[in-house]
Structure formats: C-alpha cells, structure tokens
Length: 437
Ligand SMILES: [Zn+2]
Image 1 (cartoon, rainbow, N blue to C red):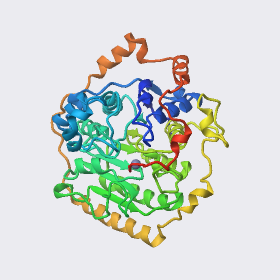
Image 2 (image 1 turned 45 degrees about the vertical axis):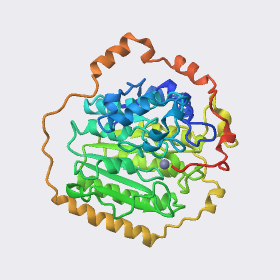
Image 3 (image 1 turned 120 degrees about the vertical axis):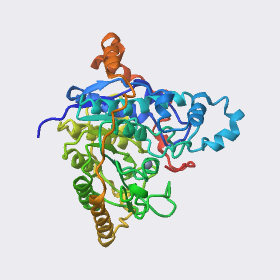
C-alpha cells in the first residue's frame, strides 16, 4: 500500500501548561511524545506544523458564548470572585482554573480544526494532533479534564465537505461529549469502546444508548468490564469497525486514541499493551479514508509517550526499533528503555472480567443494529459554507514567519529545555486524591 501523506501538529508551548499539583492530567506528556517522535526521526516522514490557534468564535460553533467568555476571562486569581460561575460551568476540582487555561484550549482546539481543514482540502490523508481529543467537554460545561471539545468542532468542519463522518474512541472512558453533540444526527456515527459499570466516569455509554430520532442507530457503544486484554479487545473492535465501515460508509474518520486504556494507567483498569492499542490504529488506517488522529486521556506519562510515538510510526509506515533512541527524557523510560514493553505481571492483578460469551453478545447486538441504518435516507449536501480558517493565509504566514516551520535543530533545542512544571515521576503516585476521567 502506498505511503500516506501525513501532517502532524505540534505547539511547543502546549507542554508547559499545568493543571495543578497532583493532578493526573499532564500536558507535559505531549512534549515528551514529541521528543521521542523527533529522536526516532519520524518528523522526516511527515510535515510538522505549528498549529493555528482557535478563536472564541471557532469555539462557539459548538459551545455557548457565556461559557467561552467565562473560560477567556477567568484566572486563578479571579476565581474566588466567580464562585457561582465556577459551579455553573463545572470548573473547580477535576477541571481546575490554571494559568493560561484559555490559551491551552485555543492551542489544542486550533490544531484539530486545522487538521480538519487540511483534510477537507486534501492537503493530507492523515492529520495528527496528540494534544487534542478532549471528548468529555459539553456545550456549556467542563468535564473530565476537558474544557473545549476540539473533536466536535473538528467534526463540524469536516461535515462541510463530507456527507458522513465516523468518530471512533478507544479511550477507556466513554466519549460522552461527542456522542451527545451528534446524538440526533445521522451524518456522524460515534463509536466508543470503554469501561462501563460501577460508576466508572462518566457513567454513560451503555450498549442501549443508540442515538435518537433520525440519529437512531448512529451512536454505537461497546461497554467493557475491567481488565480487557489485547485479544479480547480486538475480537470486538475489528468486527464492529468492519461492519461500521461497510454499513455507514464514512468519507472521513476522527480517531480518538486515549492512552488510558493501556495497562498500568494511573486512572484506568484495562490491560492493553502498546501493540494492542496500536493494532486498532493500524486497523482503521487500512481503510484508507482521510483520518484525523487525536490524543485524549492517558495518565501514566511514559506509556502515553510510548503509545503515541509508536502510533505515529504506524501512521507514517515506518518500522522503528523497540530500543528507545537516546533523548532528553530518557530517565522516564527505565529500567527497560523500550518502546513497547511487555504488559507487566503487576497489571494482571486486574483479571479480564470480559468472558467470550459477553463479548459475543455485544458484537451480535451491534452488528444487528448496524443493519438497520441501511434504510436510512442518504444525505444531500447543501452549499459548502466558508472554511473556519483560511489556509492560504496560514501557508503564507509559514513562509514569511520562520517561527512557524522549524528546523530539526530548533525543535531539538526546544525539547531539551527542562519543563519547570513537571512534578517528576513521583507525581504518578496514585495515592493522592485522584479525580476521575
Ligand atoms: Zn479517558
């Protein structure tokens, strides 16, 4: 199969934001991933762009204006004055107010949005934004470490050119914000595979959540129990995605690759290896449909960086060594210093609570529902509305502004700078009070 044209977004500042001491969400993981990507020389196989920054107007395509205004103007020093609003918008513990919050949102959202525009314009076949994939954010409410739903905003952009967009979510948590946004819609199919039960966050995503009205059967939910391993996961993922592709026939895909479904995640309880997680990405790629690849959850930093680096290599069709190259964050990856370590036996303390009969039931139920959409009316495309952002202007800016396209030396220099906010590996200690998501 011919090599795919891949673009990859990286904003050097995105790794410097900090949710707060002890908070499991660490934007620093994006910088560590990027450092591995560079040191494996993967940047030579794709185009790297410093992304566009989303404006409040871009965000208001999905979110309410009062919520986005709040995110723009709130600051750690002002939050005492806004107690009522903090509660109203669910900002506080899981989703804290931190320094630069709005800039952070504008960076990860801008990258997803630009990815969608570039896919629409056929500038690329695959667009990667590991800083995006914040699937829990609601229209007027933050949730599960997510503030602005970059996924919904990117899908809205893809819908300008694509009659049907498929969303696939392999994060351990249900992709509730995205499902909710398109619950009554037959042009977006959302497929989420996640842990469900025992009040696991966000406590939605039951098999019987199918979508409503003309969107009935366009929400697909695969509720797993804890401890699922590679073979069990693939035994559901592959037939379900295969059937989704043949019945729904999307012309674009958004793939959320939350890495908290890996074994040993600080907040997760699945047993996927990096190979097993990557197999899903590889499987989706084989359909050769324009795809926006996003990050998401992932709370054991070293494994998040391993996983997304490995998946970048799969997306650019480059075989890379299991032995990690020397790089500035080397100390995170000991004692094995490998890219795809075996799932440690410690993880197997969480045994696989997904018997084959249970998985077979889910697959059969899902495949039966998918047959129903063959009767759905086909979409008529209306006039194409204007793009969110003008790529010609952006490309021009890249030519004239050397900062927009960096040489490897410049990128290397930057990633070597120590991150003053990262709390070190001790911060992976799950003993402190961990919010859920
Ligand atoms: Zn998650």
